[in-house]
Amino acid sequence: MRRREVSLTDRLTALREAVEVAEGRLEVPEVGSARALLAKAGAREALGDASVVALAGATGSGKSTLFNALSGAEVSTPGVRRPTTGVAHASVWGPDGADRLLDWLQVPRRHRVEAGDPALDGLVLLDLPDHDSIRLENRLEVDRLVELVDVLVWVLDPQKYADAAVHQRYLAPLAGHAGVLVVVLNQVDRLDEAAAAACLADLRGLLDREGLAATPIVPTAARTGAGLPELRAELARRVSARRAATDRLAADARGAARALSAHCAPDAGDDRSREPAERAGLTAALADAAGVPAVVTAVERSARRRGNQHTGWPVLRWTSKLKADPLSRLHLGSEAARSSLPQAGAVQQAALGAALRRARDAAGQGLPQAWRDELRRTAEFSEERLADQLDRAVAGTDLGPDRTPLWQRTVGGLQWVLVLVALAGALWLLGLVGLGLLQLDDVVPLPRVEGIPLPTLLLVGGLLAGLLLALVARPLVRAGARRRARQVRRRLLDRVGEVAEAEVIEPLGEARADHARFCAAVTRAGS
Figure 1: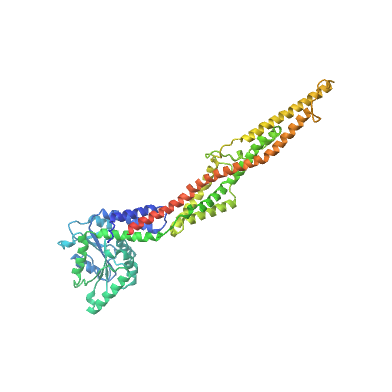
Figure 2: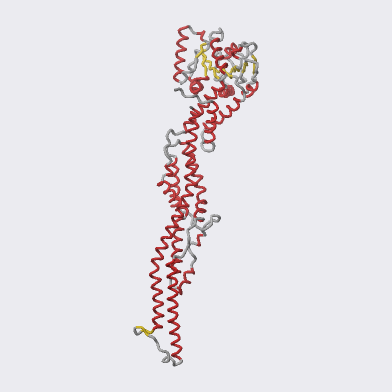
């Protein structure tokens, strides 16, 4: 089943999408060439369906004589020395003078063919300067118009038909334009029949090897008129189809797509930067660089400090307030303000750089060099933003409820009860001392427990029990502080992971997705 031919509009639309995707991402000359082609296509389509055919060739190939013979007038001066102006000549068939088209082509010298062949109506024939002119401006003019015309007729002669400069610079690069190229072997009247046949066969072989098997060869002798009817018929066929401009633009679009396809990977595989191990390694490196370990340590110390305050001996609690809370010194809790987290050291920076490179390399797995360069620029841009984003993320992370556990409140209440017990014993003893000074100590009986005065038991027992309770509570406080530190670490890692996703993984993934879109568009444009 024959595949449906892609229309020029669809082909150019796909090429435009590829250029838009590559804009700002790929720093390669092929993108600029494709952009210039799209501009050319827009201008050419607005100038009608006239067929612009250019005669190109070397000095002495008889190109100007052939041009005059086709034009039916002495329009271009033939001879060994070409005009030094570097300006092309034009002959126009049909009522439409094609002035706008020739203005776009910047061809000032124009000739209208009167009473010409009606089959050629709509033909604009150009005689280009010699491609091997000693004048640089002449060669540049040839190169410019070769890119703009619809059909290129390359005029060769028996002496220089195999000239490597012609084939390597002009013909071989047009392998994708075989349908809009005609090769003329002029001056065959200088050869006998056998030599002419051998020359044509050799030329045919050269073109076939250069990928131009679909390009016709027309033998001519401009001076005698031999082969001119066949050449006119070939031009008339191109003109009557009214597809010369479309075919040339389609060939150019395929060529541009073929050039862009060098930056496409046929099978780029999956984005390994999104694999759990890669993301975990990146998150860990970002967390270290963002100061997460410092925050976790501060949370644990702060929790221990508060736990010891609640469960410690109330009389000495005030001493813990002599030092600032380790967590409060970091100024966390707001994304709008900078925190006081310590700057990442050389080790953390090196680990961060290595993690970013691994993420970039994983995302660029299987991609062409131009896209890997783009991923490198993306990673560098991400690295510039990371420090501020990470600081904001860590500073604004909700560290969870900072509630005092019930058991700590219970122990704290019990400590106050023990303090009151010790205080009661102390006041009782002071009262007994006062009664002794007044010689009234025998009046009030002194209760004893196992021979120990009850006030002394209350005082000593309250103090010792409080100290013992504080000592027993310390391991529990440390365990609770470690548990809270682990909870906070998970919250911080989740937040750092969000930053890694937004600032590193997603941009790298978007670049890879753009590669896929780019390649899909290039494939459509070149199909």
